[in-house]
Length: 111
Length: 110
Image (tube, rainbow over all chains, first blue to last red; front, side, top):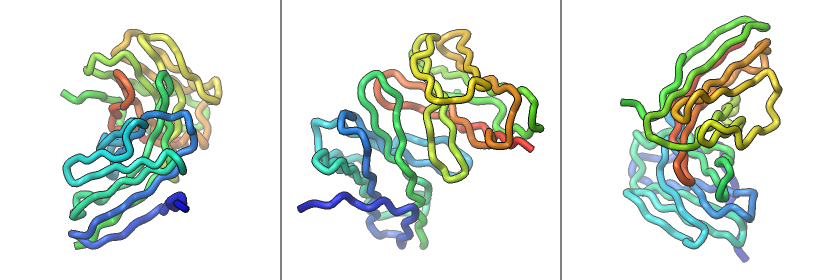
């Protein structure tokens, strides 16, 4: 069977590699999910979102996958660049509630 | 033309003092929030206001009092500051499900 992806606090990759950041969310009633990127000294910045009626959504170089069965969310970054180095957060909510954030993953990209 | 702006960016103060952080959004959003980010980068919701009315108040000491004079502004006043209040405080706004964040205010209580 499928397993919930482990949350890793840090992820180190080489420039050009693909990165996968995992998140396990807590509330089965959540129907909206976002990935944020936070660079040092800045606020979280929207990357991509997905609603619970979808299981995959693609953006520019990023893809979000949603597995509601095991309450797992992942962010895939293609051809990772040094500028992608940051802390990445997943967040969830349902209508009328504030976003609840998961633990962040620090992505370090070396060239 | 920053979408969500907070002032000040840095705030260093002594224990026991009272301080305020201001937030303004020019996005026309109805909902604004305050989040606290601790030293381990964990982001936690503190308050949420919709059209100047408080709709979410998480378990936050009553030394923290948000004030929304209009829907574009949500200020955070903190009384009797304690060492444990040291953190980065983020204001955010939304119109719908996602949220836009300010650059944060790093509060250091000494």
